[in-house]
Length: 116
Image (tube, rainbow, N blue to C red; front, top):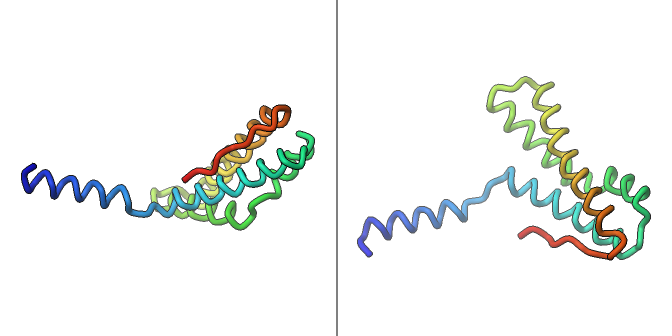
């Protein structure tokens, strides 16, 4: 390996390790929702009850993810209203995905895996 290859490989490795605040916030919210999903599976929660649980779960993580999405959208030139609409849709997609997974998993007790 020549020196340039080592330098490029090292830079790529460091870039991959660099924290991404938006992805970190998404993961924190998603993982919190997964914990709520898995607890509801353990508790044998009826699907109609899980929808309410999912809507009320992980408020701090949900807020942090929503806030960083809004900030990001604003940095791209979106107005506040459009940025909030986008952020709310992104948050709701995670909630809806977990509700769908719960409805599929409740019968067989399958659990979701925390994202690393």
